[in-house]
Amino acid sequence: MKTDRKKKIKVPLTVEQKIKRRTFISFGAFAALGGGAVAGWKWLLDAPEEVPGLTGGTRAPLRRALNKTELFFRNFFSNKHLVKTYPIEKAARNPRVNSLIGIEDDENFEVNSWKLQVKIQNQKSHYITIEEIKTLPKTEIVYDFKCVEGWDEIQHWAGVKLSDFLTHFKLEDQAQKQYMGLETPNGAYYVGLERDSILHPQTILAYEMNGKPISIEHGAPLRLIVPVKYGIKNLKRIGTMSFSNSRPKDYWAEQGYDYYSGL
Ligand SMILES: Nc1nc2c(c(=O)[nH]1)N[C@H]1C(S)=C(S)[C@@H](COP(=O)(O)O)O[C@H]1N2
Ligand SMILES: [Mo]
Image (cartoon, rainbow, N blue to C red; front, side):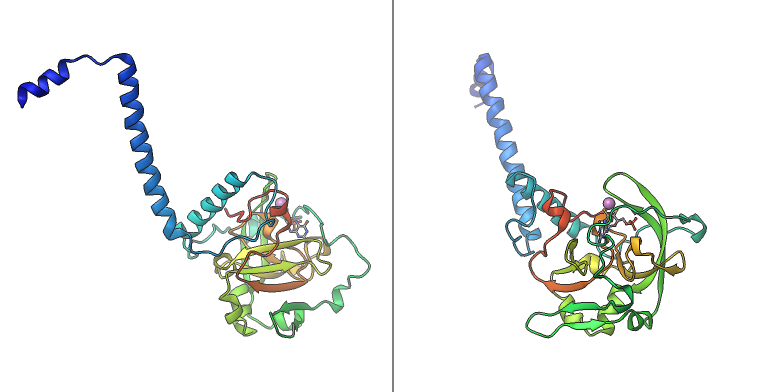
């Protein structure tokens, strides 16, 4: 046995044989790793399938990779992780206005007659006034607002915690669904958010900035502040809210941006 083995080792391998052997070994290792990764993903893949055509601008394999990355982060970070906050003095005095899709001064919009429309499947919509929303406990946050275009700014917002809002208006059942969709009153800007970020303790429906009612260009009378996401998801001038188990349409995802857009 011993001599046999020695004999075998002594036979010199040709370069070609060596390459073949290495290729075989690395292929084996790669396949094993791949198998492990596939098994790993299986437990992550509990969310419903994406509606085709919802995201755009990229090739199918890359989109699949992005969606898997999203699932990984969604499962890896619990929604108890808090975004860093700052003292009020650090907040920008004149916060920057970024983009105005769906809120350009359109003569059909009157801030005083605004109501939030909550759409519920197979039921009549609820209409909620800003006064009703303001009766709920107020939460403030000062944090670093980040835009995907590469700027960030410490800003001071106040409003009602989205989770408190959902409880108060008896929308907990709706909030059990996987996603929430928000749209401007004219439907021109719209976002989809998964449940974890909706129920995150720092997510608020904001009606104040720097201690004053939000200005028109910052999203009066009510906008979303979701600190665990990039700016694109922080919809200004919320008109309608809805709930679903499939991904709601999302303005920037359709243009090729990451649907999740988490930080
Ligand atoms: N209705 C509406 N909401 C919106 C946008 C928009 O164009 N329209 N732009 C988003 C983007 S990209 C960013 S960075 C923030 C900017 O908010 P601000 O203008 O209050 O700084 O709003 C988000 N919400
Ligand atoms: Mo942005």
